[in-house]
Length: 136
Image (cartoon, rainbow, N blue to C red; front, side, top):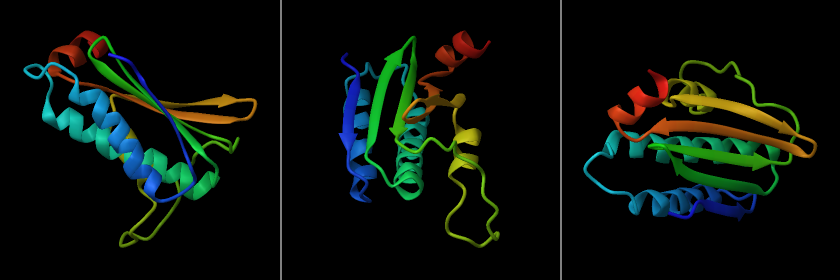
């Protein structure tokens, strides 16, 4: 199955376009072992990371996704070299929880700095068998 690799403008609609691209990757997977909850987490976190990149970096984003050894690896590149950080918002704020969601819902995540920006990435195992194999 070929990986996803799309470049998107710094527009709100890019989160939906990124979800559609990643969904097309996951739609081609064999069904029985793939947990719907894992797919839902991939979709949610794709939206969160792309939206954060657009809101904070205000640059084009590049989204790549691939399935390797039963897990989905999604990477979102933007041209802002400053790493993402948690922000303090009031409890009733409607924003500011993107990184908390990524930390809570991914199996792994991180940031890779480049000379011209950064990748924020996350990985999610598509089944409990894959999760056990990956994370023991």
